[in-house]
Length: 215
Image (cartoon, rainbow, N blue to C red; front, side):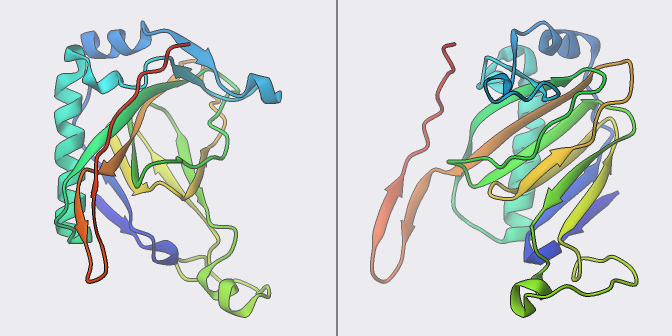
């Protein structure tokens, strides 16, 4: 199942795939060092993140890396019709135990973001635009008969094992609470342009450099 969700004119791509991690790949992810995100802000129910933010550069996950790069290039070429070169700037894993979730956030210093779900059960990712496209123009509320991509300010996507989601990095997103005894695992990351961009007035070369976390 392929699903383009053009809510508020944003190209959110959701695909249910049969690509699943094997036991060695999943164990490698789980055995990474994780830290509790948001504790300094008092967020006790937030997700755990890997210290390694270049996780998909590891040879143990080369199969997953190639899968995601292929999916992004299809998204960029066939949907967005963009010629420029992009590279994966960073990638990490998240882990949510029971009654934990990914709090609302967006990805800074990137252009497009992805999430792949190797281990998830009965969960949703939510995109929040604050206002629908109609409300941006009218600036007042209205009664909704049935929610759709034109009248909605939020949009939920049901996710399961093997699902892949790609979206512009500036969109706020979050997940529901994990209500299962098994931890929810996801792999996330970003793509940034790595090419010369030109216009009639200006030409500039953009070089993407990924960084490693040292904490």
